[in-house]
Length: 85
Image (cartoon, rainbow, N blue to C red):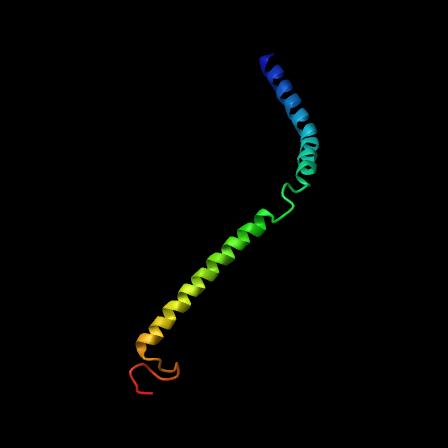
């Protein structure tokens, strides 16, 4: 008897849960449709941070390469290192 009652309650809970899930999902979707901040989105801010980081890295790499060229004696890239220009 207890097993039948537990099964019936589980089936009822499952049916109610499945019946309400589309309504709850629709309510969440309509609530999040209007942007909270009309300016930049989170994705735009994240991409902006990544671009700034990449730009900084490229600047540091360029500075390092320039210092290597300065120490090497400003030979052209076609000449092997150690040969006079």
